[in-house]
Length: 103
Image (cartoon, rainbow, N blue to C red):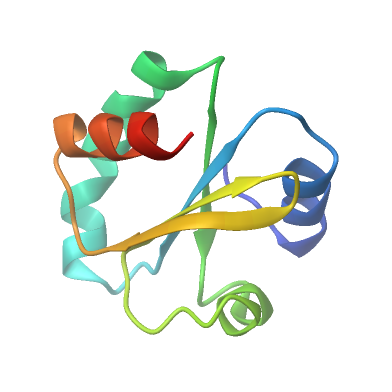
């Protein structure tokens, strides 16, 4: 699920389900390499955790608001608050392990 700023606010603050966001950009090679891994992690984590993506080029306000300095960056939100962050490309197994450790 691709989020714009309004959808991000709605999903992160108004849901009891933890939200994992992949902050990425189209020009980012590691982001493109991780995209299929992230997609493969979704069925292993949902519906307990919701996975989404934010294109930092299309939504620069979100990248700035969360001080995203490198991409890809995964951030886990609970109740509208960031509770964990991991920068760098990850495998499907690493994504699932990281989310399970923090969700």
